[in-house]
Image 1 (cartoon, helix red, strand yellow):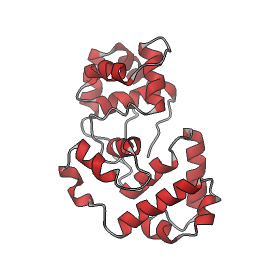
Image 2: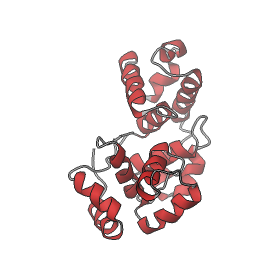
Image 3: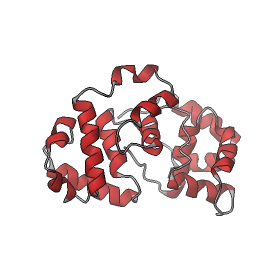
Length: 206
């Protein structure tokens, strides 16, 4: 897994502008966002992680890996749905994973064009897949595409961290989150990653 080439510059610039990030970055030396380099796995992990804790998602993913020969589209597409359910997946998540696998098997997701697409264009394409909403697409942009300027305001971890560091623990509106994050441009993905680190020093990877 490789780190984005912009990481050091982004961290340096964010640390100069934001004392909170400067403090978190000092505690996270040597840790960076890293892409697994597998589009299907990244999207599948994001679906598994929807609306559950990081720990619960890791447990389900481990069971899924043990239950199937390989977490690949052609395997998930044809695998027994009840066997997938026994991994701890809800019925809807099984449907979502198998629909995602179908999109890959039938080449309905055109990975060849992704690098040329804007963030919003790619989000629009990905959200055509059943079960992939904006949050899942944003996780894909951050963790697979390693796009530098994504701000997933619907992410519970980001909401918690920003309320803790910028509003004395009180909830923040999405409008206020966006306003605070203006100082992070054009590195909002990196700032988000550091916000997550402030809650959990072990990096989450999709």
